[in-house]
Length: 376
Ligand SMILES: Cc1ncc(COP(=O)(O)O)c(C=O)c1O
Image (cartoon, rainbow, N blue to C red; front, side):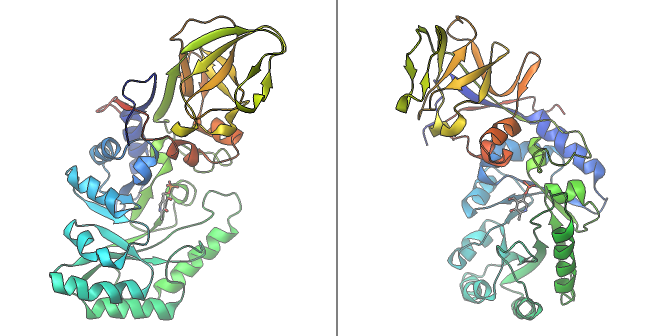
């Protein structure tokens, strides 16, 4: 990926906010609990290495990723501590994971059976976290009998595997209705009944469970979206703690012109001027993750809300300006300008998605600048 270092658009990440959001959670957690920073997907678009380093400084003792390569990138940046791959990994890469001290989620016996001889041959030991599917319907053991087979297999292969953890993931911890969450918790306890020797880590909580079900148990919090200062529920539930959004996204006006009534703007000419209008061009588009469907949404320009007019193009979009504004005027897509704010949540609501998707989508071609390291 080519990073646009010479463009008029950037993502700014306040590492002080990341640290603040971790400290806030550490204060709420039990003494026996550890916080693993979830830094998969380029730290939800914020930048995996700077965020992981800041998280470690703030007290995270481990990391969660989705891919082996993300885990290796953390190790290459000299990050110590547990690195857990939350998704299914190929059994053929078991030795690679062991060599890099990566722990992996395991959701079926086959993975263990296939990887055991490879590990034995290489003389390597792989750390595994058994995934329990208690109602997410994604990965993991959902029956006592199959879980028992995996536990027996691990017990018979102590040279190849370290049974480091066991976990589940809640599907509705961010919802007002608690019934499915309670069902999952009951199923988790039922499955755990066959685990006679508890591993070092037993974990169930993502951000939402940590926020609204802090009695759910476990000794690790897998802390994702709240670390970035965003509410896991959108705005359905109120957070029990004060968090700060870490990411802002800024650009500037690179072209300004006056249109006369009846002029059209953008592909498909989906906007026609009604009066004489000042129109500005912003050098950001859907290739940066600023979705095509943001036509009609508002960004902040010189502290005022301005409508996106016409379709968002691949690298540019147009806005209706309140008056003629100079080239170089700041455009805030996510963040604060003066007394006004446009948030990832507002963009998500407009685009009918979730705040996670807005920040994760921000392309790696946007340069990222880091502020306030050391402050929280
Ligand atoms: C298994 C698992 N745990 C934890 C998380 C972090 O979730 P959140 O960002 O809601 O805290 C995720 C995110 O997708 C996940 O898949």
